[in-house]
Amino acid sequence: MNNKHSTLLGGAGLLAMTLPVSVVVAGEYLSVETAQRAAFKQADRFDEIDLTLNADQQKAILALAGPQPPHGKLRVWRATQSARLLGYFFTDEVIGRQDLISYATSIDAGGKLGEVEILVYRETHGAEVKNRAWRQQFAGRDNLAQLQFTTDIKNIAGATLSCEHVTQGVRWLLALWQTTLHGS
Amino acid sequence: MSCVSSERSALSRLRTSFAVLAVLSATATPSLAAAATQAELEAKVQSLAEQLAALQAELAQMKAQQSANSSSAPASAPAVTSATAVPSSGSASPLSFFGYGELNYSQPRDNTADTTADLARFVLGVGYRFDDRTRLVSEVELEHAVSSSEDPGEVEVEQAYIEHQLTNSIFAKAGLFLIPTGLLNENHEPTRYYGVFRNFVETAIIPTTWREGGLAIQGNSEIGLRWDAGVSTGFDLSKWDATATEGLESPLGSIHQELALAHGKDLSVFGALNYTGVPGLRVGASVFTGGASQGQQGFDGAHITLWEAHTRWTPGAFDLSGLYAHGHISNTQVINTALVGNPTLIPENFFGWYLQGAYRLFDHGRYNFSPFVRYERFNTAADYAALPAGLTPDTLADQKVWTTGFNLGFAPGVVLKADYQWFRDSALSDRFDLGIGYQF
Image (cartoon, rainbow over all chains, first blue to last red; front, side, top):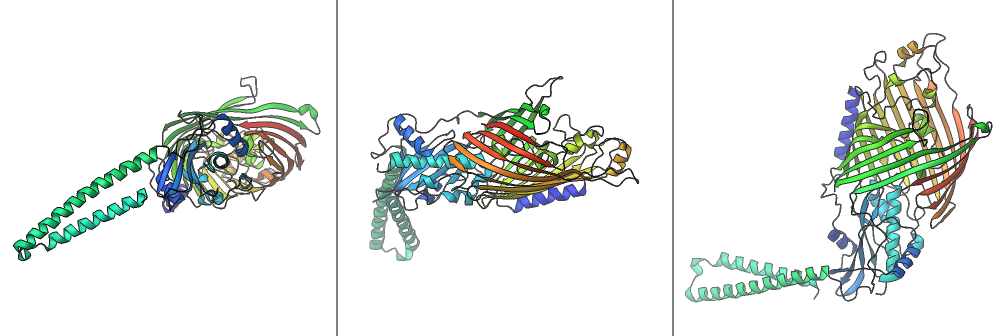
């Protein structure tokens, strides 16, 4: 390897050292508890719901949400302050390109989405989905018509599958809230 | 009182008690220990100790209650009764299967006898997660349906690498992996690009699907910066076939090694930087450089550098992209001198660029429809190193190609494509293409 190569590698190494790095704990970027507190700062309780749906409910949700990627485990919590409902907090998993992405989001009592947080990302391809600016696109939306992939939720070229599948997953959660959780 | 606030209150009282005890201990000096005062102090200490014990019990009870609450469903949980809450999942197994494929039909305008129908690619991939930080990614590709000594097909291992997550934002890779360059090389599945065939620039200049064996690191930051760096095998200029035209179709495609008993004396290095911090925008550039003589006699000093810059912007229903790529092979003068008389000498410079615009005209459920237009200009032999008078080959004219057509998605991961291509200043005939592609 000549001097030019060494310089390039050295430059890449230097760049690597100057970029923000945080120590990973088993591939987890954010704990569920931290994400819950970030979503509902005033909450004094998070009660997990044992959520199961019958066939009609699933059909209704899918009809609203549209096509879905394979999902992993879904968990739902009610966030309350002095017994007053603040909203729901969700953790869900959708397939990225080949492996599952664990993400979290929330829906307040008025049906507005909170930010999307990536809890665990397991593959190099599509890792750009962790971008803060991309995740912030969801916050404040309360209508499935405002959650169209590429037009409302802009894509990240090179991370299309991850972006599309997380968007589809969030659509499913909002549809779940609209059909089942709202008013319960 | 709420669970959390009552816990805080108890903790606060506990801290106050400790503080009082500490103050009492510090001030209970022998000089102040008159008999009556000491008895009072002992009574107070006893009282505080009892309060402390009560508080500790209260705290333990509240923690237990809180833990129970968070793991059981409250009475107001939704009245739902079935066992499955979400669409199907394959998350339990560490093994994953994936793949893509493309079939196409291409009819030239001038000579319809050259019309072809082809199962161009059939790719199956296997992933395996060894633990929460370490994965195998592999893809095996069959090109042109049948691979044998009498058929045009090839079987190739397109990717086979281990990736390991070092930190929240940094992955390492080792093995046979795709070089992070351009817009297509790492995203080459048919559902990811417009047109039946991959664009010419990212085929003739950047030899997509281009992979090398080596080590690489990749980092991503929350502000949208992705960087890649690595050391890998490189090109082998001794593979150049001056008697064939393959080198004019894709200079680097004709001399890449694909980790098939690759000569590894001269390693290459690469780096790429991409910014995606603004939703819908990607801007990036990459460089790959390294020796290409691989210690083979007669190819001393050969060195290859390929660099490119690209952008893609998707405002609303538009999808706009552009790319410029440039390749340079140094020290070709001596090598070409020995090849004079053959039809295909080694170019010193080659380049290409394209601009592409698409518009998602229709997007409803599983159906979407996006017409597009692309203009490409490229030259696989834009320049040759000077040879003695009369021996330097003529450079090629820039090839210009207009492509227009549409992608019709009719199921997640499935696309039907059609396009028409006009070739300017090229020996190729204008043609109509039809194709179907999938990815899962």
